[in-house]
Length: 246
Ligand SMILES: NC(=O)c1ccc[n+]([C@@H]2O[C@H](COP(=O)([O-])OP(=O)(O)OC[C@H]3O[C@@H](n4cnc5c(N)ncnc54)[C@H](OP(=O)(O)O)[C@@H]3O)[C@@H](O)[C@H]2O)c1
Image 1 (cartoon, rainbow, N blue to C red):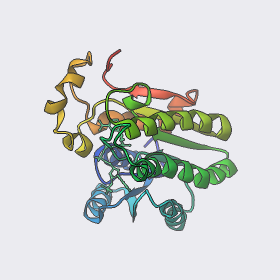
Image 2 (cartoon, rainbow, N blue to C red):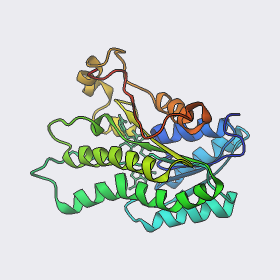
Image 3 (cartoon, helix red, strand yellow):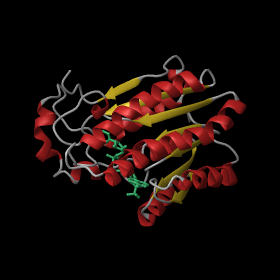
């Protein structure tokens, strides 16, 4: 029970790696607040956690609307009185190129992938500072440290997430540790939207582990970063990518 008596917000936890992280945190004793837009999947995650003896609530909304962040923190405090851990995981993909992307799409990607993480941090930081302790884990990407043809708004947003994470570590420490995880190819709904792992075999071939990751590969690292086991790790972008292009 490495997270006993801890309250954790995990955004984008109705599927994929956020869901796996919510399940693992709850198993380790955390009270978990999960977010997303899909009520059916949100309810299923909360029901599963409760059936397993854990404690969780969901807060529904669209991360492109920053008022949703206020709602998440308000509901967290109402339900559990505090917040100890924030995992900024919610994210969306964009296949647009530099030439094709509209400013509207660019804005939406940044709202969901970066601005909502910033806003949530601004809201929880005073609570954590007052407690003298807190942990923030941001979900970045392999797209945070390299670019490829296409995906320009997504890649730019994930580069921003890396810079934001390091800035947060400097500005919110020493009470709050902030790290980011940079996942490689992880088999989730997002990857299925690109045709599934088979359509991305080239990425797998470029990993020494020669496999696609699973959401639990990320959840275990999020748990490590959320506990004192990682107390001397701060401001890092931790690659969890099977050695992609190492
Ligand atoms: N899969 C990969 O290979 C990979 C690699 C690197 C980084 N990542 C990053 O990992 C994170 C999790 O992605 P995933 O692969 O686990 O994808 P996923 O299974 O599609 O999960 C995405 C989660 O984000 C939520 N979400 C998306 N857009 C939202 C919005 N506008 N408002 C509120 N919630 C929203 C979704 O909830 P609803 O559907 O309920 O709205 C869902 O819970 C993302 O930040 C992604 O960029 C993924």
